[in-house]
Image 1: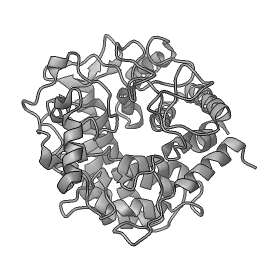
Image 2: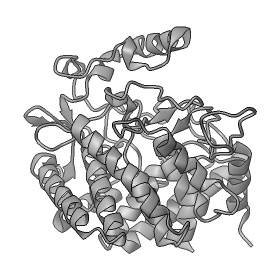
Image 3: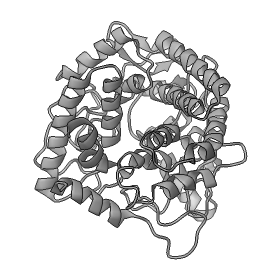
Length: 413
């Protein structure tokens, strides 16, 4: 018998399933993001796959992932946000449309659990085509990748050292055409984003080398190489493995700071100073060298950076913009990045560290559920007896089902 926390996640997730009242371009029912959106979101759905795969008879996992392949454009691109008419919300030439490429990770994980026989052979061609498209479109000349505040998924994470770092010069400009929604609705979206503080950040993209995006693209190549090998495509597997090795060399050469013992974003000839959760993508993507991984793991015990009582924050506690009340990705702990980190720690043999961090995070999220009666979009790394900050949504299963289901099953049970 599963515990009440686990059952609550399943019940919320089932209530969040989206069912179209009339036929649309998308398969229905489909997994909800947790936020009750009609649109589907790529990286939310990828992370949802890691809890839904434990209950494939109850949740429409295949259909939810297939919706993205159904809406892939002729050049191979899969938009990070897709409307019920099957069209992407964002111009595919702008990185605001580019989600972390995690479909291959989710598909490989399902295959390793012997779910949906024959599926890998069907999805490998569109996965490879998407990978080739983002490589051509969102990779800088040095082999590192760039994204966008919304594209990367960490909406309000500050990457700049100073506000005058943020310029449109050299970037892909954010214009009305970047919003691929016609009429007044699209006008409203554009006006909203253009009216935000630091709205220039939506044109501040390829000027940088993004640590998280560079690792995610390399991770995609690594997962695709393993899928190719499973399918008996040895030559393609070698090509993709070589791409991963080259990407790892580029990240290690350009984005590591030996003084601070962490990986950072780069702007021109200097590393930026923001220490954020994105640096830990170097573990799961198998980019960090063993000695560098060991140095990074020490930060998980540092109470001034990432070693906080109830989880690993999205932004280091030492950062001046760390904010647990109004920050979204400026301090709160998120289930998807916690799961990513735990998987990365395990890959490098830090199993005890992973279990310890998983236990304190799981316990905190369970305490919050007991105190509030629900599961939240994000959590506070220093408080576990009340609801999170003002911009965390409740009933978020969605990817927050990862804590009671997947983190418990894979790291604690």
